[in-house]
Image (cartoon, rainbow, N blue to C red; front, side):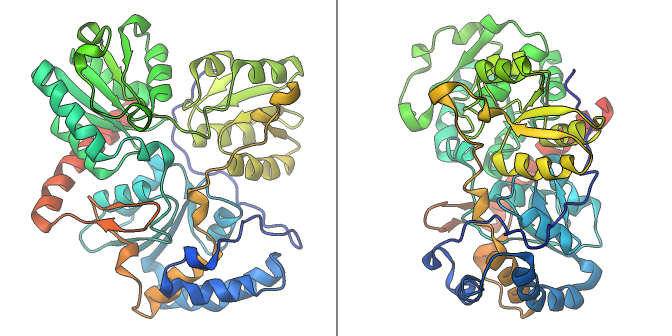
Length: 441
């Protein structure tokens, strides 16, 4: 089964089962911003987490907001959202999609003036970068970050890029994965590079190779390596840089073996959710008669042994397009797999999480994206109610170039001149991605 790079939104509505508890871990009250704490207190006081209790409470805040904003409001969520948030967002007319489709929502829907995103900060910032001037983008919880993005902060990357520029000059081209801040996407734009997603990375890398450039791929070493193999790059010309969290950034390029012969340099970052997968897990499921699908942020050996690999949209649609009686083990974020399992069962298709392979003591559960799960029902209700009342915290308003400390919630915002320059370069990198992807499709 080949990697399908077609870009689609979910084919099916999510099913919110009656009397089934909403699978969303309750956050401690002090995790909420002060203006959100009253909503959290009410939510925590509900008798249970079934739709019968939660939906009327959400209705009391969200329906007035929907009536107030009308067609100018757009609710968004990513497939990986924890618990049932994706189902709740869709219940109120929102869209659930992968990072590529989410990035295009503001620019493709100019009539939507207020955009509320339940996902992680870099996704909201990407939407804001491509948004029209009269659109505002809000995130339900600004502390919702990405562990991979935390391994490639601009203060980590900038010194390394400067050293690489000194060594290679205009020969260097940066490809920034979508899972980066706008400050890194701007570096890609400034070096003549582009943004990529897991669905279009082969197109972007091939585009860069045709220019004869030396590629710096940031931040996911596994997506970079899987993409390089997919496009036929000599693995001997792949060089991995140190992980900044474990090894710091105070190292010399001369310490990196093969750097002058490298065609692509891989930043030493990764997604903890996807690094749990192994070829042993893949082979166990295949021996049991199941097809295995996996996300390309996973280690190369696991991807090479799977039956198919691709983005979240690819995983979702491949399963739901399969005939009744099919069986899939899916290697990606746990909340996504659980939601897919419910949807697939309605069509007579079995789904299990790849990491649930029975390999003795090594058996583990499906890992969810904990930082994305920081968006929960109180954040959704509070965000919409506060926007309706004109009292939304500025910390939740997302502009291009914003960065947020995932632990403290403190935001760094560029001045208007810096933001204008950054937005131009980041938008250039995003628009190159869109052009390359649409031409390839």
